[in-house]
Amino acid sequence: MGYVAVKGGAAAIEESIKRLKYERLKKGTVLDLHDLEGGMRCLIDQVMSESSLYSETLAAMSVKQAEGSPEEAVFLMRAYRSTLPRKHYSRTLSLKNMLVERRISASFKDIPGGQILGAAYDYSHRLIDFDLPGETKEAALNWLRDFVQDNAIDHDSTDLASLPGVLNYLREEGLIAPCESNDTEPDDITRKNLQFPVSRSARLQILTRGQTGAVTALGYAALRSYGDLHPTVGELRVGYSPVYIDSPFNAAKEDEDAYYIGDIKVTEVETLFPVPVRKENGLQEIVFGIGYGLCYGQNETKAIAMSILDHCLETGNKEQPTHNEEFVLLHIDAVEATGFISHLKLPHYVTFQSELDSVRKSNKKGREK
Image 1 (cartoon, rainbow, N blue to C red):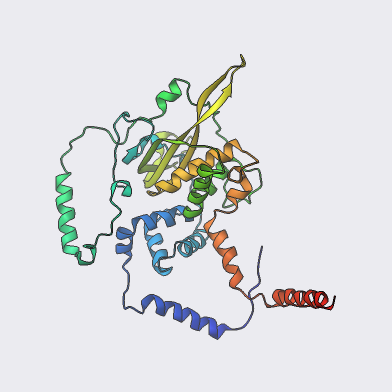
Image 2: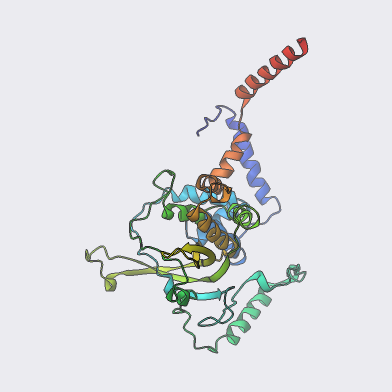
């Protein structure tokens, strides 16, 4: 739905923009982008995920301009992304080669390669650190130097780039529901309007760039009352995955001619859902269905919620709103939701006056009776 801006008031708008800049600078502080990248890691990851644009520098710039507002920063990133030429398509990422920083399973205590706790707030006390106001850059650099020295010795010979999947042995036992291979070209939701029902590739794209709070809230709703399910996290991984593009000079697209262009940090989650399956002999067995989540950066809660909604939408249940494609997918987009709510601040003089006249006439007729 489009809305036509009201003409006029250019001088007032200019003053409003100046006032916006004043509010950002009035305390005499100019935020350094490098500091934002280093100190606002979780916010940067969230903005990159919701904007579908992997650039920590651009995300930091957008956060600075938006004064820390995630939805405004995502709006800026999406707008910039729409101006970029698409010169190459990367090869399909092989997350089996992810260089793992954190890896846990809530389903099994002992897993091949071991549980790797990594960096997470899950194990902290959630108490405000009142020493932070006195933290200095010199002290931080000294702590960082000592930490790097203490961890320079390799205490573990585990190859963090070749960790086996936790769920592989369940697949080998036939305890995971079979999934047909689908090598068709995925839909691109940035270039093609949604048409329901959507493909799973389109659904996953919308979920991974959905607003973190909205995806989390609907995932929670599915667990609490509107999904009748309780999954278990089979495996959660956080790490860096290499990205390759094919050589433009080799039509055969052989592996040795692929170009490595860098790594992206991602969070990947596979959740397990018990699913009843009726066999040919009429008997019913239980296997595990998979819910999948993948997000830029370390974005664990959103990735888990995404995997829950992925399973809900894949199974479908007309009685539950969290299983309804249109309900879920049309209401989790940060830009769409923020834009539609914010448009209510635009002038609605004509429509409201018409409504007001109708109310007055209706009330007058009621009093006359």
